[in-house]
Image 1 (cartoon, one colour):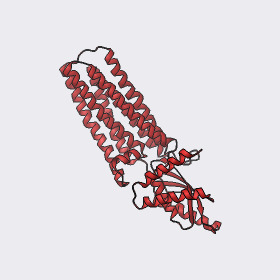
Image 2: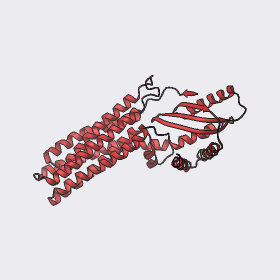
Image 3: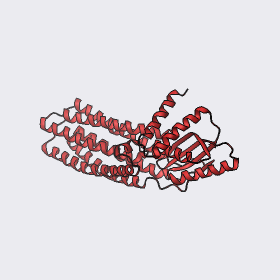
Image 4: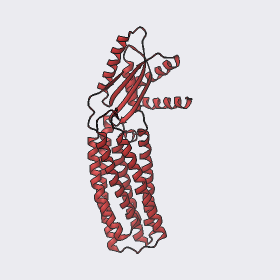
Length: 356
């Protein structure tokens, strides 16, 4: 049986504002850094210019994802287009790696092997001014993204770090990662250029460029890894799964939830499929009634649960024992145990490791 909730909320309205602010900041910064880099021929400044242009392109990717993901479901995509947000974020991660990290490292290596004219004091001053303005703009964009993450974390009762790691909204995670790397990159560029001016050695400038590239490569890898999991069908957050397990198990007609399968279709849309063993003696009409009640309860109480599929089946002894363990974890989670979701993840990993 299946049930769907009402119309999906407009995806990413706050995320869109965050991306637009980041896009505006990065465009201005990219132009300024490019001008300063061409004038001074600073490797670190040119690396930062490439970084900012890559970020600007990525904001276009993210805005595209928000627009395309908002399309309603149709016969070709019956569960909607929410995974567009994961796909375009993956492209953004590739963009960071190729355009930002690749250029920065190559520029630094090239600077070590090639002699350039020494910038004069006016050119160094121009570089510091551009870096200062960039720091203010990138910092503003970063604070906007971090504020959104903090608000979401507070709504879910999580710490900031925990929510940033477990969030299934790739858009705000991408902006926070990019802006965080941008602020670090600006500081590294300022350090490298300052040491270049103080010592007269361009090696510090080149080293800063290479280090910026390494930072961007790490950010691209982390963002791509998380987005890949969502794109290929990652399950919903363990806390949500335990909440669903607990809610369904409260029905007296349900003897055991034998299997709970979930998939994150978008940050705002979760698919739920369950195999349920009902108590003995229920006729088919009562099973249908209880199934409808379960579907309506889940879609009403959990806003992201929009597709529910139930399958009435019988269970083996092993399945019932595993169901009881998970149900106890669900009860602990409902009672406020912060470790219940972690124990569920560990249980699932042990089960997967023992699967044929």
